[in-house]
Amino acid sequence: MPTRQRTSRKRFLGSKQGLLFLVFAAVIWTLSALSETYTTTVTVQFNFKLDTKAFVLETSQIEVPARVSTTGFSVLFRRLFPRKVMLSVQELPIEDAKNPTLNTAFLLDKYNRLYTNSSQIKAFVPEVISLPIAQAAQKSFTPTLASLPKFADGYQLTSSLKFSVDSITAYGSKVALEKLHHAIFKLVSHEPLRSDFLLNAKLTDSIAKALNWSTTTVQVTGSVDRYSDVSFVLPVKLTNTQENINVTIAPKQVEIKFAAPLGSLRNIDKSTLSAGVFFEKTPSGQLSVHIKGLPFTAKQLTIIPPTVSYFILE
Image (cartoon, rainbow, N blue to C red):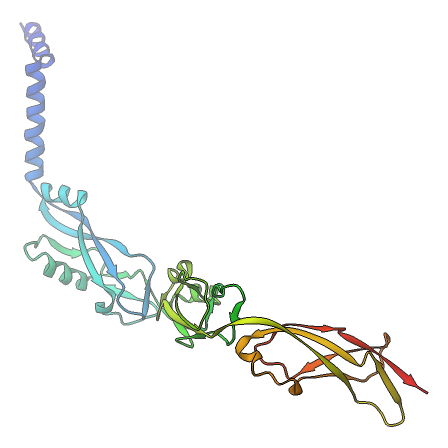
């Protein structure tokens, strides 16, 4: 008789009805277990919003374990979908900026005000946590351009570039600031320039993302004019000769060629230009020619010849 009962039981458990019975029993047991109240820990995710230049974020979020007393259903749900709380860095009661920590009683109060219908969290497990922020440092930079503006053929700058600000300030970690030596801006796309200009320039992306900046856009201005080539023939004047030495030079005149904006060329007075050599004995017997009186906008100066020979007459 017992053998017949065991055989019947095995047949039942191996049947579809038996399998359904086992599944049903497992579901009932799981539901019963999840309905019980448990005291355990779950994590709460805290996200940080950086709204002050006094600190920098080392990471934007942390998870802090919290002690709860709640049903198994709630524990399972919270572990699958952690609660999230946004924290403004400016609102944190930080006492030591060099070693920023936070009492988790503040987090509990913040959590309870956000989730007013939830009273299951008793406390966060650590009483004090280290915050993922660091005290910010700052450093000033003079704006520089990655490249000059584009000019139409024959046109060039006739004045130094000017920026709308003399310097900009970067805020961030001391380590990042020490690695950065320039604030490099890139001009926005523009047509080749033929006249005075005002252009916007943006801080290059790689630099802008590394730190927080007082500004990431500046304006750049400059004067532009068409350049033209010009040449003059000038007599060469010898200076620094001694009274008891009779010195002569050859050739006694040189040709100079340079480029200058048309506006400057119209006002050039040849009488203000001069070519000179400073006498001193040299192994080569040559003296370099120096030109004075050129407009400050002159470029590409060529002197033909660049040196003259000197002769001491007995």
